[in-house]
Image (tube, rainbow, N blue to C red; front, side, top):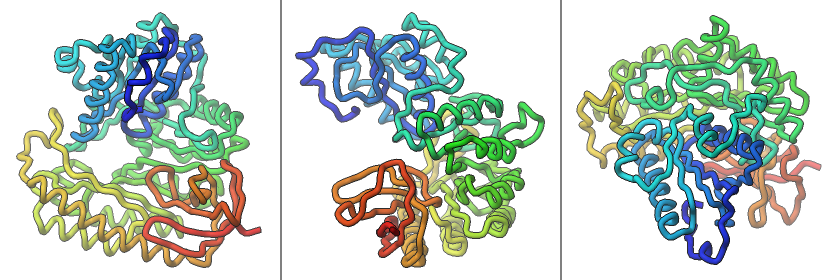
Length: 445
């Protein structure tokens, strides 16, 4: 929707009770938009996600405020719809989400054409503004924006971690876990609608339960979710390394529904960077944790995310990170360049790594990871994997193994000319060829 022009809208009659929800940012925002859409539908609104029909009278933009690029995309999207409003192509523009939570006062002054601004926990107020009721009986019922066979399941909101670079606590508030019973109900509802894979998400998934149960309770949650009929895969995202609940690994190893997959953003490896970032760990503890995870769950797929160019990062820090990546050989790895965010702990530090050095270091990391990924993928040629198929593009059915999450990880391509699979179904696939981030295979009959 964000690239859509509004020329075609002039001939259409706007539907006052139709809402177009536009989502920017991460999977947590996708989840929030889905819940918002579910509430609107229950209030008899016609609702679409990033509609191409261009006849909605109301547009609600769910913004991201995580780093500079994301903030700019959110602002550009708001301005695009404000321009459409001024042309009479939209009646109301409302903004919610992280950017709105963090910068509402400034944005109201800069973009007065927006009809209303809401924060990340303002859903009841947003609905009231639309003369709709917040329906408490809708326990997790929502309109999926993903293919029906997989869905994000947000198990908590907010974060209590003190990481110096991160503005998420400013936008999302303190950690609040969702009770296990509510999450199981959500999972059952999703399974009834055809969902087969749950992606567990949170700002910090491994903190789950401390506020409700007085202990980290992620292991029990995973076990309870796996009891839901119809759910085949449960995938864990956004684990935090400090205080990692090791009982989760036993569940992962012994429960066939819990994917042998862990997304654990580590951010850096040198002791001085980890200390300045307030990560609550050290280089050696991080190495020991990764080794323990691999010992406990043989063959586990590990994904991590790193930061390049944090204040004070030297070339020596960068080289040490490259050496660690080479030695650790993560299955999946992504990297951000550092963004200097107001009111974070690191904001008082000098943003002293030039932009070109940040980008050069990030590129060096990804070039190294590309080679590692290629080598790992070559070992899969000739092997068979259980694959969940997400979509068809051109001449290929495209799916994922247990080691791959949607959007961010590798994909498996099967020729539609020689094989047929149903979208949303599993199939055994033998890998015939491997590239850096893609596997090619044939369905085993």
